[in-house]
Length: 368
Image 1 (cartoon, helix red, strand yellow):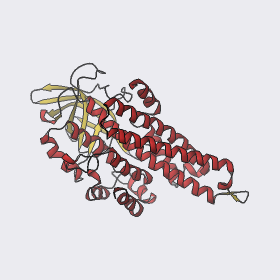
Image 2 (cartoon, one colour):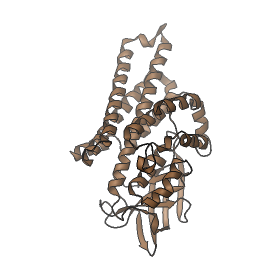
Image 3 (cartoon, one colour):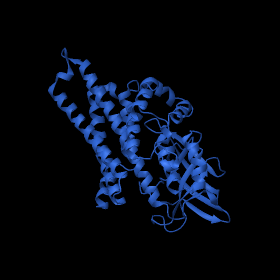
Image 4 (tube, one colour):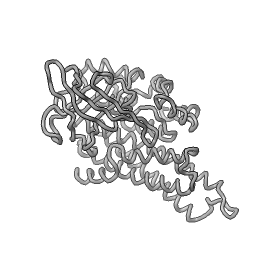
């Protein structure tokens, strides 16, 4: 039922031309569609039943994100609900969750999760942004990069160093900071895939002490868990986008003719499209395995290995399927007028998001 509702929405309301109009708008996403997501209950999917959510299962999230990927939905679902909402769910007190989670699920507040720094290299434990306790406040100084939904978020969930050295596992905390707090400077930009992000600088930003999520210095496990859920989400999005690339490539080769014959009849191209199909199926299977592992009771290290295996394998599928789709479309495959080029840009961005294939291959080996 969840998959069917998303399919109907994207089929009726999210054409390629509509998406281009949304990207060209001031915010880069549709506030009307965001409210519709809330009305349809999609914003509740990542949240647990005890938080009045849909259930919080990664397999449900995968179903939703795969359909989003097919039409390259640009609304900030992952930054707000999976990352930001996930951290609130994992670390927040009962009072904090009661205040903020209903607003997130109602679509009335948007979040951004600021964890990456210029020297962090995908390492969540590499935190140089500092927070110093002063009376009943925290004073925050530092810089964050690639903050998804950073330009439009109402609240920022920021990983800060409250004790220890820059790369220590202990001493990392998460503060929830209003985006309009004095001392915050946001430099907005558009990524290659059309999604908006920001670089954020904190200069002597005063944050009330009650905006700390969880115990001071103990936030890293929650950051890793929530980021792993986000990785599964974007892997599922990539699976949907790769399916679209495969389908559009097959259809194009049936109509494109060389020497008076449709190029789909050329055996060499048939073999290449068969390889694309295999890559798509492998990507879907490994993502499903990671989602099921996250929902299971296996040790945390096994969940992390499954997620890294998925991100690494999906990254390889992205390169194979994306490049073959562009090659078989020829020059038009990289034009703005055709959706194939935009799908390729989106999956290429996903390949580097939260760690590229090389990083997750190394992480998988290290966790073994």
